[in-house]
Length: 146
Image 1 (cartoon, rainbow, N blue to C red):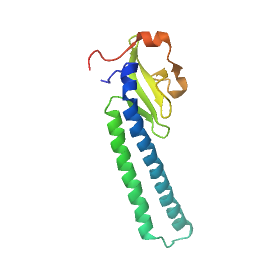
Image 2: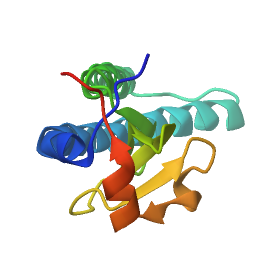
Image 3: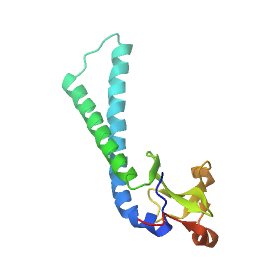
Image 4: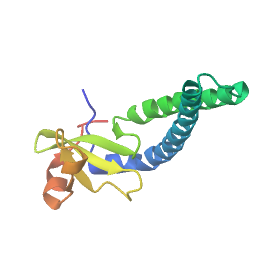
């Protein structure tokens, strides 16, 4: 059963989540860079029918990629342990389940936004985001007790 947040509860978590998301995005970029170098080396070997590869450099790229992936996994677990949901790591998209007029919906935040200013239905996704308005704020709720 998901945890349901009020807007103030979700926003209270944002500084912690933003810090961890910043680190995860940096590590994701490092992972992608190392993975790209490994792929380039593999293509070079395939295209040339074999090629001399700097083994130490190749191992270093693999170690960087694997270490970044492990730390990203840990950060994702830590972020999601709060009850929020990472929807797209590459852009830092986070959703917080809430109830609006008795229906489960999601408060939506993207890395770099000042605060949570949008919500959407479970099936609507990022493109279906709607701005928070007075009706939503008045009629949404979180879990009764934390």
